[in-house]
Length: 427
Ligand SMILES: [Mn+2]
Image (tube, rainbow, N blue to C red):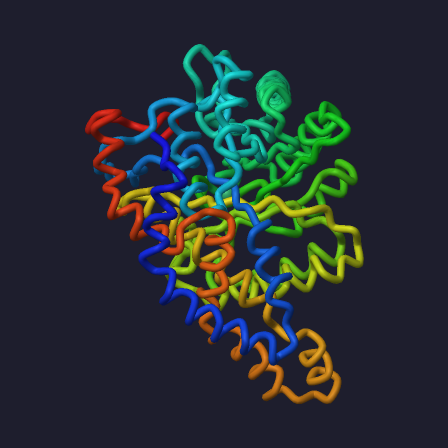
């Protein structure tokens, strides 16, 4: 299903006067403080976040799953769901595919469907964390790190195949996340596992088209609980440097041990020009994959402060970043959850754009620690939502995406169209 633009306009009309008041108040205030509101709106309009194809259905935990109904059962339906999100928010203009869950049967038709909805193809993701039917060798004991060359070769060939599918659709990057690791001490020769992984990544990198990039994602634990082959940003950076200029580290917010200073990792990687992209989610304990901004909104803001500084003072020529939501939905309607995540990401970005970096630098130079904190917290505490709404309004999207989604009863319509027992492929 699609949402016709005139329906969104009708809803927007009901809130137009209230919005105008709120927008003018915030815009005036920002203007007085020296921020160019038009530039701000343009940056928010341009900021697009990829939705992963595996986030559109209800997932589950190892204890089970609950169903919701109306989940997309094929790639085209997944693209249609993202089309709904994009029509409402003007922020979900890309999809990230997982191969083999999303192999396109008719790439040209899939491409033109996506184009008609304003959706581009972001990074493609390989999958060597589970075995596929008919697969010759198992990844039970690792893929790119495996002690057996034949198994490593199979995993490399899979990644090369993923690149080929991405090329058909117009992707320009591949993300490699490995479940490889050990559950028990002694299970791996730690040096050899890393050496094999490095050589395998170099082999994949050699198949990368010249205008492509490879993102290397790290994670400290899970599904393995003693060691993972790429546990942290330092190892991801080391492997990227061993591959070449177009290999970069990818930060997934949930892939850190508790209390890690993620904003500092962002700053460090950008200083080296090696930050490839971001997987947004939120967490309380581990890789909880909760809605962005639901647990630690201040941390998200501080991360964006480093991203904005890094993008605006790009000393190491860091390439443009790939933004993606990598969350899992077990309870909430995934589309509602994604609307909330997109809003939280845009809020953090907009607030970071309203940090006065010149004032901050002066305060740092005079060691005025109190003022440094004030500058950041003033930006964080500002209600920036009217600016976001204005950006959406001008792009033909919704002033209030979630309330339109609910008023239109979109989930009900999806259930009527697809059925109540559908399961999204890949989960
Ligand atoms: Mn991720």
